[in-house]
Length: 132
Image 1 (cartoon, rainbow, N blue to C red):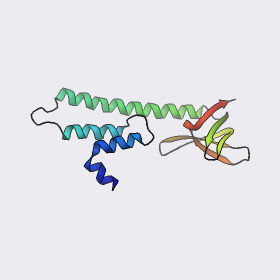
Image 2 (image 1 turned 30 degrees about the horizontal axis):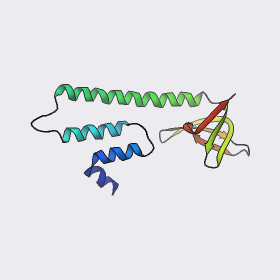
Image 3 (image 1 turned 90 degrees about the vertical axis):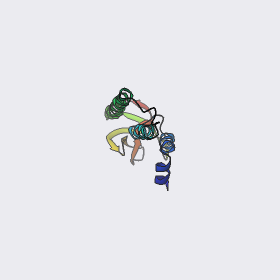
Image 4 (image 1 turned 45 degrees about the horizontal axis):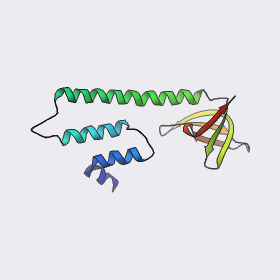
């Protein structure tokens, strides 16, 4: 049913995807908005080629920012290897030495053993503090 809503109202689909835990537009949202704009333009006042090319250039900028953000998060997580982190987990706040970095579903995660020796995988954004 959600795919029907996305086709019927792409603007609402883009808004829904950005409010589902994100605070900024991603490439998919940008393309949905651009496509919607192009399909709803007035025939008597079409988008100029200058405006069209400017928006295409913005696509490249959005892609570059997305890739830079991901690379930055990966480098930040890699710098935590061997360091003690305190992080929020489903079981509460836990600490341990980072032994591995993983990427799953676009999320950068750190892996450490808690006080009981259990492996904990948490998103980088859930790390609250770092110590040597």
